Image 1 (cartoon, one colour):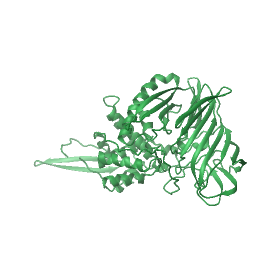
Image 2 (cartoon, helix red, strand yellow):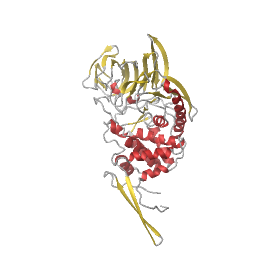
Image 3 (tube, one colour):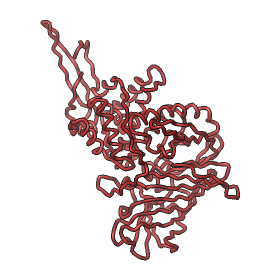
Image 4 (spheres, one colour):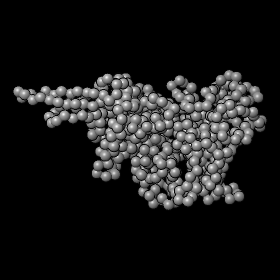
Length: 512
């Protein structure tokens, strides 16, 4: 230490590092091939999630065509979904989807043949084929259904209002997709591409993933919206929102020269606030684009659709947001890299989504402060949240509990500070290079904490096993008591560490 500390203090070593300045680094050149196919991931590393039936790993989802009829004034969904799939096993004579039995299945058609099916439990749809389909075949079925979806988790499928106008919106993270469409509800198989076709009364607009291919009147006062998304997508990131939106576009100039639309679907009464918020968000998108790798869905769009839930959700290429505040927009935008491009492969690793998005929001405030103390105040708020409880690890101990998965103190804030500590420990160059390597390696796929750890170790040359054992798996935080004696022209300093939870006996650290 290079100065005398008067008195006795207690502090978190990891939080002291938050005072370190940030220096932007140039991103690596991104290999411009976003339409690459991903592999099916039956590996035990990746989670089947909370499913009604375990046997959904005998096929690989390749494509979905969603055709839905939705009226925001009526709590109901009607439509047909057509999944294309590759058969992975021999003797493939039946298949399962995660799907709520609350909804009524009207028919399941395979090559013109009406198939038999059963729903042996609340979230299982079992479909029988009249013959076995050969291994490696690519085939499809069409499932028609209708009804009022159950509402679970953070909503799944919700009807609400803004002012006096009705809106229907979806939010499927973590387990809600099965409430409103037949899916694989795990974290082991992304759909390679989708078409989303929504028919609604013509006074409304429908927002969804990807590029808007067409909107056209189809008679009887109805209009059809066709969205196409040609990137691999997790089931919980598929979404629609339908109401009387006003729309506008902000142009985004990316580092490689691409000019991409930021497409905004806004409540008419909030248009002025939205225009300011999304204009600011253009700057943040350009910042992330240069800091890590190029925006991963740049052949289509980024955008926002306003909805009624009290926060935001990073639906792929179109985040759903309650308002247009800096923090909310910056956080959801960050998920397009950390959460959408690369998705956590198990809910116990949700910090790979939420910790990164929280940290990037902080970096956006450092780069573009929204007041003289914006960045310091942001850090102080996270510190207070982390130290508000002596227990809890970044690793999710119960990945079936939505409250635990989305703990703001642990998955978001402590996860973000774990990254801040790693950046201090490894240095800016190593940290950001490892993050870029991680994104490139796991692009359009799933990842576990071990993947990130491997890239951090490879770039830095450091063994991070103890670090992750203490700070990712361990609970709580350290405190320090400092005392000293001065005599004979010398100062003797005593430093004592205590930990808030017995899962970690001692947290190794160094001071500067």
